[in-house]
Length: 210
Image 1 (cartoon, helix red, strand yellow):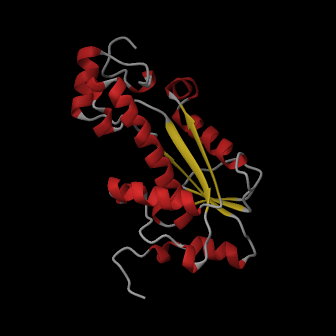
Image 2: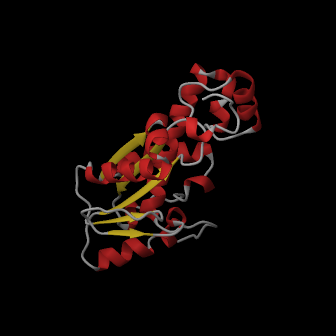
């Protein structure tokens, strides 16, 4: 087999450990959008088939994959996934209960909402109080195939939403910055103020009244 610079087969250490223990349904969970000034946090939970012939080459931490390739991989992941659940918390929830609690709530809803209950959940460095066994993995989206798949699903889902919001609120350039604090985004906040999808708790330094 020809090895590439990034070989997705090297990201199966955790999955193989649980397969060897007799676990069948191994889920990966990841979030996207904890840092932006606007828009939701999005969580994906996916159970992928793990036979050698099923592994999607090119899967990696979504931050390390180009936008074009993320879109291609998203379609492949959604076609192959045994089960997938996407949850989100909007700016109002984030402002009300804070971003960490909003993220954890989304993760729990995603896991518990799966059509197939996971035997174990691999998650990117977050501890959850959950009914099924969970293994938090630091930088898990770069170490676990299942988490990386979840990362890509969450990232593409959120990015598509922010592109839609860019058409509604063009002054903030959401299509390019996806709600993160780019220079153009911050300048728009200072000059025209916030829009309904901004996180009030995140923009206090840029807008006098929120």
